[in-house]
Length: 160
Image (cartoon, rainbow, N blue to C red):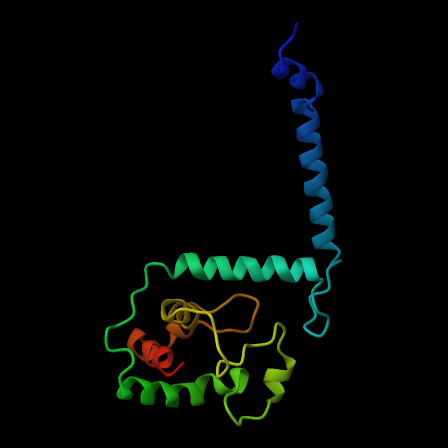
């Protein structure tokens, strides 16, 4: 009597079938991209599954990449917070707003919407630093680390 493994082998697709299926999927994916079938316009939101996938990808990537980041011990000193407030007003307020700040044309046109950072966030200081320094692709969040040194980025985190 054949064992369970040998019976399963008879029911599993063969190697050529799997290769043909992979080629077909690749062709369909290439056609999907080539013909611009997915609307990436910022005024046409993603479907719920796509948005959930992208949101999970973003959150996991930030969590993993920020693991090795260590905040400075004096992060919460008044000097750091004050310096960060000025940088925030200069670089962040147009998109992320603030208490008493009206929505701007830029903030209203972003998709996904930039989070209002004056409201509670579940990001750690290390994650905030990583986001500010490296930015987030396809979200309009710039990589400020290209133009600002780490101590200035930590000042922004201190303010947040």
